[in-house]
Image 1 (cartoon, rainbow, N blue to C red):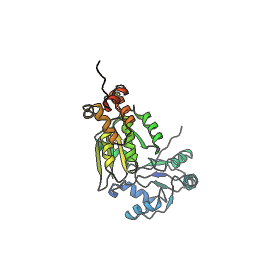
Image 2: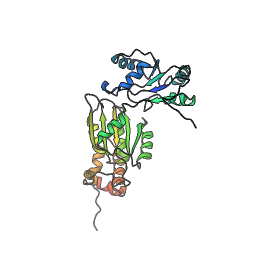
Image 3: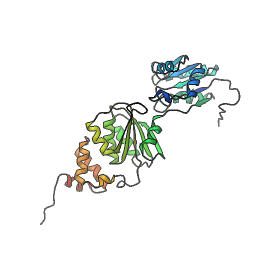
Image 4: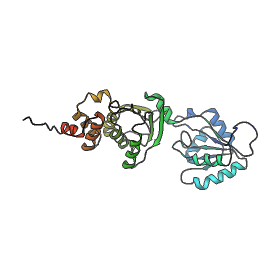
Length: 295
């Protein structure tokens, strides 16, 4: 067991401060965050060039060292040595909360192993900020972050999540959003979902609908900016996960809507069959308009 008293006593080493930075609007920087960045002796930054813009805006003169996914193995021991010498260090990522789909976790683990105090400051984080305005159930929620890029790996992960009852939170690049939403529609059917892009910025936008509607929209419309994607949790019944609007459509219309998103007809037929809890052959015949001949 290990006990940390963050603000009592006189620690023999420096303290690592985890400092969130704005995800778009610079006014979201807290007074405490600015003061911390001014008073520490060093800032460990994901990208020193990006962080320098923030430091310039708030007239912060503290020096930086880079800490990112490509150099953390060499940099973490250096930072630990400085902390052990009594140097206070603030760790920041390019935007938002350090360690949340950003670098930082390895340094935290190393500090804990060396019994160096780690103090986290509250502040901007995209996932929960978007969630509370999404209209989806805010709790319980399940933050996943970025899904795998390869479709096969992504589908494997989504299939492990399809029975999760918590609202799911993903981050996604605008360049991969179209395919990711199509994959979600393939696995989850017409479950309700929300896309938030350009959060806290002047072009902030929410797209609300079911996954099939969103996939159809993205098939014809490009979006810009980093995106937060939230999907309603499973109700416990595949049929209940289908929206009322979709349930009113014929089986053929449901397949056609999925095909419009770019899904192959055979996969669309399989998805509609699962969503409606009917045999695949039934949907196949409806889609291809194969009618049983009467004797």
